[in-house]
Length: 434
Image (cartoon, rainbow, N blue to C red; front, top):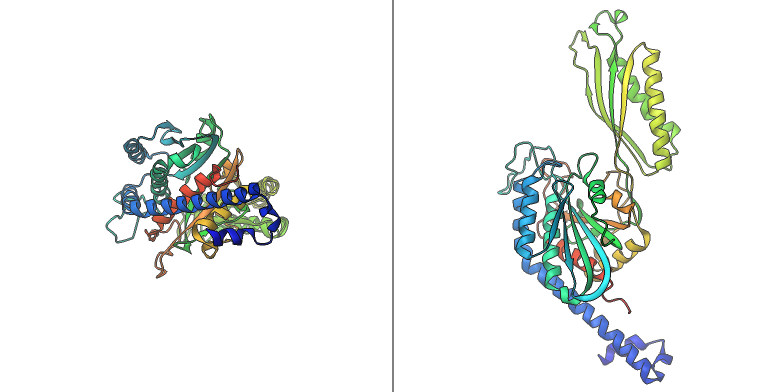
């Protein structure tokens, strides 16, 4: 201790001139020592339950359910919460709000969020915990998020005498499908009574090595809108196009014309993406169909440009089909807003992450043009969303999200459970000067 005290006093000799100042330095050291001891306790607890959390994740992975249909998943989570004696409340259909209170006096509240739904993908992994549900798979890591939050709950219960305040656990349905489960959870009171000072969430990321996380302040993820288009012309024989109104050729021109909204009308310093992933022209080698059906997505990080782009898309599409004598139905389903991490909160989370993981295990990713309904929480309270590395040391877990071979390095679960618990108690104020 004497060496630590001397180091802490270096450059500030005036503070040791009185007994009161010596007591101040000693108290500050004691708080730092207690913080380190609690950090080690959390890490030890995370290692001890790691096998159980891996089992939870595998169980969830084996039994995936689509958005807003997570009935068995929800029942499973409730059962785990009941085993721990954690009170919960059902909301947003299959969603769950659980609450853990520390024993120390405090009225501060922090929220932690996990999403619970899966995707309509057929899994191609040959593993014991492969999905048993045809055409449904946890290909985005929501099983990881859910199992992790259950593990975090278990750790927080074991150290509740060390912190004060309330931790809300949000197990949210329907992240993968509009309108998203987040606004439903908000409407039903997940962020009320009491109101959290902040909410924290994580997302599995196969491009980051297990043992590391990615943190980004400010703009983090894009907005997301669904585009559905029907181009209606007049079908007929492919050898006599002059007698038809070819919706295939018109739809192709429309795709090219819409892309020019991004490249020639949008400000190039504003990230924007327009992609069409479905194009159905159900004709034949010599049959021009009556109609073409398309689906796509538009993403950006600027709400003003988002609104302008919507108007320009409709104007462009209408102009193209009218020029060739066709008609179209052009529908934009406005989806999630852009996700932005609160600057001050994210600065704190970075500090806490360095404490727990070390500076060398923190990465600073680029803007990610995927979308997340976690963004809605950030419109209500301070929010921070970070990326959890899931790639193995051998680099064999790098299949991308939404891929039928997506999987994770399961040792990541020991880190994710403890780290989220650490973020929670530090955000509640533990270790800060009183």
